[in-house]
Amino acid sequence: MSPAKLNGLILALPHVEETTPFGPEHLVHKVGGKIFAIHSPMEDPLRLNLKCDPEKAVMLREEHESILPGYHMNKRHWNTLILDGSLPAALVKELIRHSYELVFASLPRKVREALS
Image 1: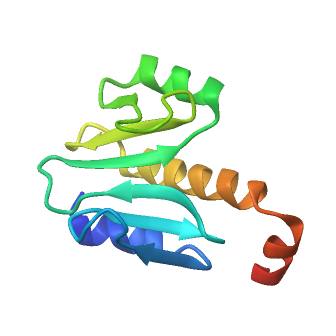
Image 2 (image 1 turned 135 degrees about the vertical axis):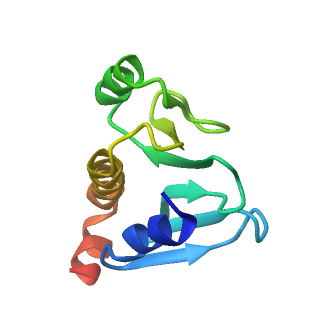
């Protein structure tokens, strides 16, 4: 998956903000001010950090060699996907959506209502 395609998938979600708090080489995507995805477009292979339900995170790591505990993140709640072509695009898209929905659901009610 190309960095442009990945970025397009992430930015297609509602109310997503792209920031670079760790420098221009790391794109951080937020909803309601909270991070749900981080990637570095210059990496090869491309790596993507996503929030994940802890039980699902373990299951995904067991099923896919290209899914690892979150690099520089809380390894219980974050996975790193290595986008080397071994993961189906549909799974990557599903996990982006899962991360987004987890973070959106954790936002304060007033923030969620303001974004809806």
